[in-house]
Length: 109
Image 1: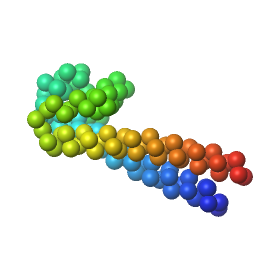
Image 2 (image 1 turned 30 degrees about the vertical axis):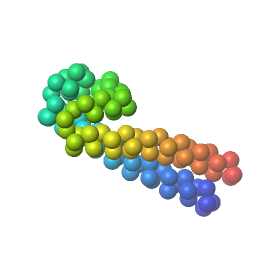
Image 3 (image 1 turned 60 degrees about the horizontal axis):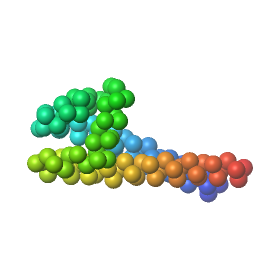
Image 4 (image 1 turned 45 degrees about the vertical axis):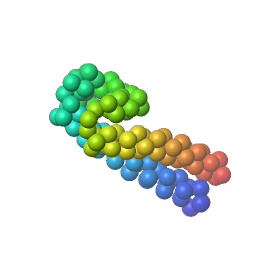
């Protein structure tokens, strides 16, 4: 197995782990928002923590990207939101690196 292929496997595994952590974190964020800040949760269209509609996912991701949660008097939710923003960026980077490594490994064959 080539070094590039091995690197692609490692990056892909890290990507899978990061996506799982992001999914769990997003669930916790929406559940805590619904429980502790129902007005803010309703202003987002009352998204399901299970993200049963694609619109729920995009709405919550936009809310996190805009840092809308920073106005809420909830240090735990703010900390979680900040961690989810970082984790989202990590997922994007890992996806890009994995795609580049897979492409490079395929070209080298």
